[in-house]
Length: 356
Ligand SMILES: *Cc1c(COP(=O)(O)O)cnc(C)c1O
Image 1: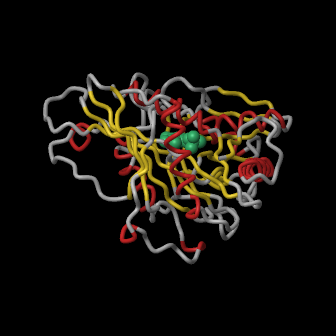
Image 2: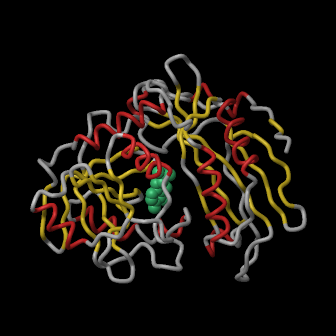
Image 3: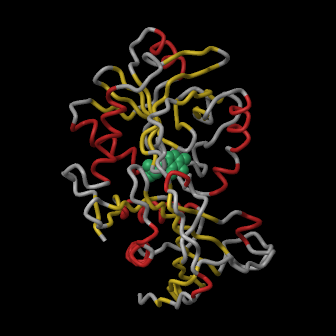
């Protein structure tokens, strides 16, 4: 599909950030967005790149009432030689359609998804920060915009992509997080929407996250929704535990997000000589194995922070510290290797990088 590029009037140009250390995450957006519309009977129409501006949405529209919404998150990296690279974007395109199917929304052809992202990033490339650890966060989103209060899949959708320059997550060095194991609320149940990247999963997790913060924790560790027993995810990241040279993570059985970082970690850990087990592991075993020292390190994985070291866990008022509470060797190695590949400083053996 042709993408029209609308003019960017001088008054729509934003003032650029000057201090890359103040960028934070998801606070500022670039001058333009990509958008295409889907209508029943017509399919995808009118793909265009236009000045970034608020949408006019009917107060009755479906996304605002029944949450027909999905999104993605990936990054563009500025390499030292000035070129720009994406990391495994076709995995995001595929997952987007998996989410769309679950939420009864139209699929976005992979080619349209990838072209929309690539063309927008190319036009906005001067917004990509250059300091170590910084990147351009890309947020593809699909929303239902029908002005209709009946409960049914909508007939009109916006697929749009916005871009946000983001700062270094670990500007002051790695910060191991303190995790509260959530034994009251659940994130997902078999047959639910846990495997879809949809806003409702985040809305329903906020209360748990807030209560954990009030108790002094950074994030929560989700247990399975049936027995509140098996490890699932940590915040909005996939969760890994290392037993010496063995790594375990929850299997993809419909209740956890199929992370691009998770998949990359599994491949890299195997390459580094670790055995990776995707299997159910219960929290009592985890607590016992941390106390006995069998579990040597733990970390979360996701696009925003890449790898997040876990320093301590609290379950039913019992606190345990992982290793020495610092950053484990595998955690550090995976972080260095993944970010090295993404920024072009390490060779990309697996063919993950897409240069624009
Ligand atoms: C997006 C997301 C992840 C991480 O996926 P990546 O592709 O690695 O960024 C993990 N868990 C949840 C709930 C998510 O929404």
